[in-house]
Image 1 (tube, rainbow, N blue to C red):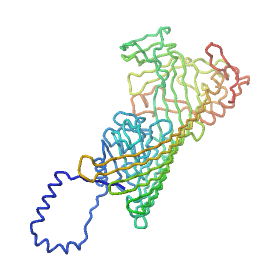
Image 2: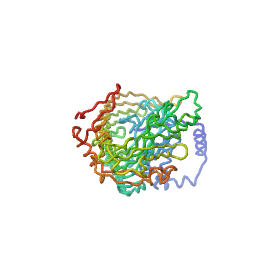
Image 3: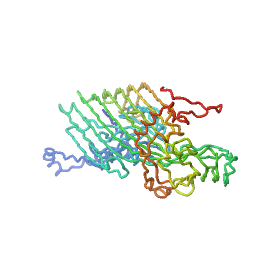
Image 4: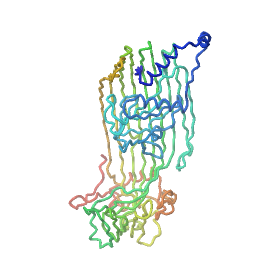
Length: 588
């Protein structure tokens, strides 16, 4: 129950006096028509649609304490956008982060996602992995409004430095009668390469009240699928103060940093992943109002996001300043142009699948005790889980910096590799081979190592809140007093496992373990073609692809004790004493 107490302002008092004076003046004609007018029905004009949504948002801002912005649905099942983050970016001071071209997290007044608190119907919601909330997990069909509180509130949980975002869901008694909405949409994703270009989005919501609007039920659900491709070009790490004095390199040094620090790239490469995403949402709300002063609400909210990725990457690795032939350093101390002899070129195959699941069961009792006192009790149990549905796996194929002389067929070696960060939107990287080959061949491909990882994050949250408001019916400076108490218990757990670098040949003779027919030259001239330095501008416009499962199966079958595996097939890198450790990898 919401109780609003209006105070008489000077304008209202003036209007009241004017109306009172006019009542003293006789109006015979009007008096004669009053009986007929009283018998007529009163016409009610209800504003809905976009204008009604704007009016409701304006009322929330006007009646709330502090700085508040709000977005409300036009009608049941009709939120402005199918993604909450996309809607929130309409608000001043709110920007969003995108994942695969879709709104994901929000930044408010410069504070990143981890500094913003998200609540569902004024309930604190659990998150996994970090404090940031991914709005891509929730569909908007059952959302009736989103409120962004940019100033602190005593009634909200602490932690929202940038803002507290409250998501409100539809309730049947708030909109009496029978209402239903069914939606069917199709998403056309132009980035898709391997999945379906057109994917479906289905949603439905049903709300009805019974027994003279004393009992209400609402059911909603939605399923959305999407296939897309994600592309990137990146340097994984920048190494400070690399010593290249022993390389006799031709260096142009324009560093103007007072501390003299320089930054050298560890690698530079291209990557892409083909993603398949499925989002499932559902909600059940039951409400009972035995009297006009008491409303009981039981609700259950469920959301699930399933994401599968099949990824590829390729690029060059630098030697931490070794064998540098030339380099340019800009005024910020960053190496913007580098040329190195030898080194590695790598191709990576990877696969992952994750599942994010959120559940929330809540009870709310809202009791208007008297005209001046309102009490509200709310309890909920919510959980969030983020886990891999299978083992995340990586299979690495690599070209070594020296020819494999003990292989049945010697492999190509890199003569020189280059990276230029100064001319185009994304870096230009290239390489040449010592034996005069224009390109790598399938026979040059072997495996270095493979890795398997898995992580499970769980967060269980129990919260109990008792709130009250006392309204002062008398005129004065004190309009109302809000009071309450809250108890929250959070149980957070993270479990992670990583196999380490599993032996998959460690280069050496590993090229002999893979038939050349496994590898196919793939043109990459369309990759990142929206940027200068990408597309056909790339110096490396091809990579070698292979079936992920076949490569992993062969890598797992390599026998460390096989005579053909004697040259480095299962060797460990040198330890801190410079000694080489070798032997089979333990199954653990």
